[in-house]
Amino acid sequence: MAPNAELPERIRELLDRNLQEVFGEGNAERRRAAVDELWAEDGVLYAPPGPIVGRQAIDRFAGELRATHPHFVYTPRGEAQVLHNAGRLAWGSGPRGEVPLYTGLDVLIVADGRIAALYVFLDETVVPQ
Image (cartoon, rainbow, N blue to C red; front, side, top):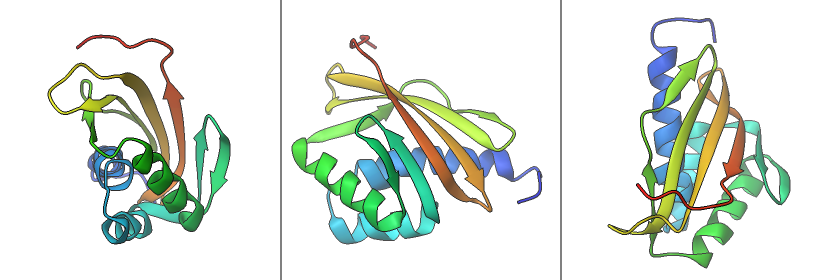
């Protein structure tokens, strides 16, 4: 995708929607639809277990992760930042309305309006909001 005025907003949208509609979604059909819409077919998720390649594998990983804490919500911590074809968003996760039990940072690379790569950094300690 050629640089244009719409790209920064698309990157912010991808960061937010991936957090909520992929990793925060408990419904398998809605999550899969979001993965298909937001992710490149050969997208790569770099997470602590190792690289996860392709929409099907990313969907499966997000569903398995969601099943470990179905009542948690993901809450952005500050505003998304965009630089060229990349963006980052800090977030926290835990029960709604409570201090996050864990926090992290998503850094994504966009190609052709979709997530080509997502790097998930997990913080070692929880930082209260």
